[in-house]
Image (cartoon, rainbow, N blue to C red; front, side, top):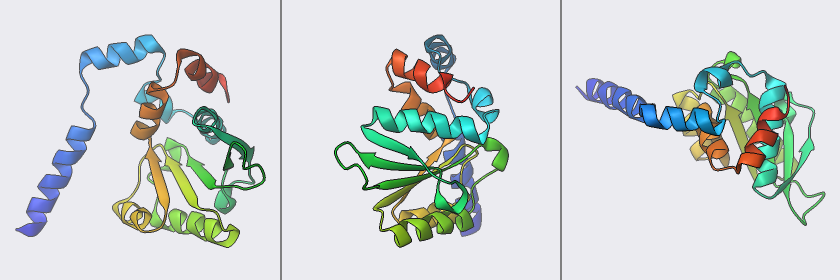
Length: 167
């Protein structure tokens, strides 16, 4: 019985999280915000470029990294140059949902380098095991919906700059 309740609750929350009105979709399109379908077509380089602009808009200095387990971007707060405070790893939707194994790699990197936090951008979302792992290991998970919300709050100029990168 508990399993059925959990399955029902899980499906209900997934449906609620993805609902939007026609008016919201029209407003998003008019503002230049990319659709979920457009975001699903982005390659790794484009996701990394867009995240770089979003981080800059949040006050971070952005440095490219080697990628893979080492992370794609290193972020430092303005005035803390040379001191990375966040390591970011990006995965396009084509990579599928991010597993806990990928998060363990990022956590290992931030631990070895003594960095405070890690962000994992996974446009296809995250496995339930990955979400549980992130809660206890200083990792911020950013799904496609989360990235759309971050893009939504950018100014028109910054949104255009973010979306023009990596094309």
